[in-house]
Length: 134
Length: 280
Image (cartoon, one colour):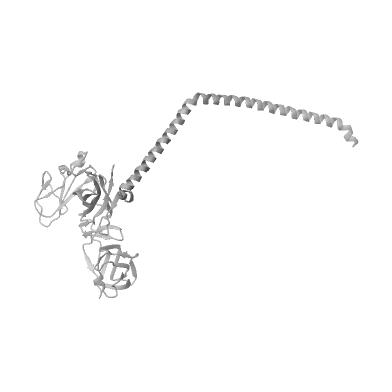
């Protein structure tokens, strides 16, 4: 205890130095923050200036986008109405496709046969043997 | 529906890889076909049941056997013999050199542009002659006009015509003379004359003669007026006259020529045939 009391002065001094050092560091930090704000402000100012300069083209681009969207919507609406009319006037058009294949399993064959194995028409064989019950 | 299995025989052991089933009774269904090979092992030929319709053929790896077991589903299989239900022939690869297929009539929506669509595999040297028969009808099912249009489905638009007697063959289109080949029984002939759409040459009686040529219009470009109702593009697309037309009734006649006598084991496989209509 005695030792502590004797050394108390130096302890207090040391603590003050530490506090001063903290203050010093804090000040540095604040200065750094202000510097940073200054730089950022300049960047923001430049960006705002750029936006102000470009406002006309931005406005033009927005108008173009809106116009294109309107055109597309109008085209879709017309198409939908047209398809609806087609369905009413030509019901078959709406239900049948444009490709129509013939049924190869059906028809008349001469020297050709429908092969189930090949799923298509093949040539008939020249020599055939008839199998019968005995 | 009664199911019955039948054993059918030939007089001797045969090597076969092709079976043609032709129905005598309608609505015939075959659920299984097996064969007893020479080594006594029963081999499955038909794996999935099939409806025979008019006729069906099957191809399978060559088998040597003298007997086949067929299982048939038919209401009358208990009372009829197999000979009264179906004709069964077997054969070994040695295909016909000529064949004809005529489709049933189909109906498609009318659009002024028409194209024949097809899918053919294993073509090799085979040539095809396709005729498209069309009748265009209006809303009241009246025929507005009809036409028979020969179309090429060979490579590069080559056309082929066949004859086996007479002094010449009439072609549907004016040919490019330099492109013309005349084959008599597989041999090329140089002695011929072309007069408009007729090729004059002497055809020996009973020999198959083929005229293979390119029509002039496919090299000239533009639309070729086939008739007052039909025009053709150089790629055999058809442009039809629109006259209050509603539907197109069509059927396809296909002649297949497989004249390469060196490849006796060859057959083209025609997987699909049809038409595509479009308004653009």
